[in-house]
Image (cartoon, rainbow, N blue to C red):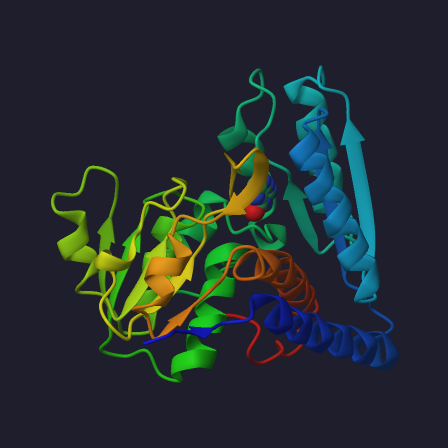
Length: 296
Ligand code: GUN
């Protein structure tokens, strides 16, 4: 079998276009423009690229973008004061503090200072608790993007065996909660799981989010399974830098029913879902109906 390639780039473009349509209608009918504030502390090159891309995408869908670039030496009190100001600002509906923060700052304290209703990353402890108990919350962007692609490919997910490899707070755990919310039978596996290959082979849906280049190989994939590769790893091969996922693409694609490529799979969905979450937060803040299909 050769797997169907799930085109995350095209899917993300569709989601961004839907968000843009809603934003235009919202502005037209109510005069409200959704706004996203992004806070970057320090000069980490990868984070700078992410923040630049987020800014450009936010503008492109017609939202207001507020960028706050702070020096690497910024103290905790100053950062918390900035967040307090953004929490109180009615033009700001979503707040994202780019991670990782410099070592002298306590990420948990900072993230938990964000008003949960503006926490478009879904990292605030209140949103984690709401998701875990099946209540309305802000949902982390990467797992939300994976869920959208899975729903699009499968229709209903109820009863399917899902295996999530990886137990991070950002992807693995919320991904498992979302799949459980859609009535999958969910296993969370990780680097210490015994006979990982056997566990993975039980999966109708296999989500790889371990952060290890090409760790999931074709022999670990059940024939016909859907493979979602969350990994983005830079490796050196044949003297060149190459971007690979957590899945060994060639061997897995030969067995799977459907697979997301790297690049062009899950990656583009993350920013699209950030914009979707900002729109959702704006609608909730103003007591307006939420757009359908853009939330969990
Ligand atoms: N750094 C890398 N990915 C993310 C993300 O999704 N959100 C935030 N806030 N920081 C990140």
